[in-house]
Length: 43
Image (cartoon, rainbow, N blue to C red; front, side, top):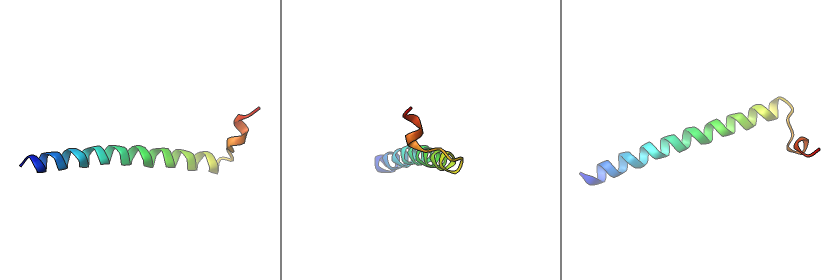
C-alpha cells in the first residue's frame, strides 16, 4: 500500500514538473516566434 502512495506522489511531482517544462518551452517558442534572439540581451 505504501508503494501506491509513493507512486502517486511521484506521479504528482512528475506532473507538476512536466507542466513547468511545457510552460517554459512554450514561453521560449513564443519569444522565438516574436523575433527575440538571446544575443539581443547583450547591449
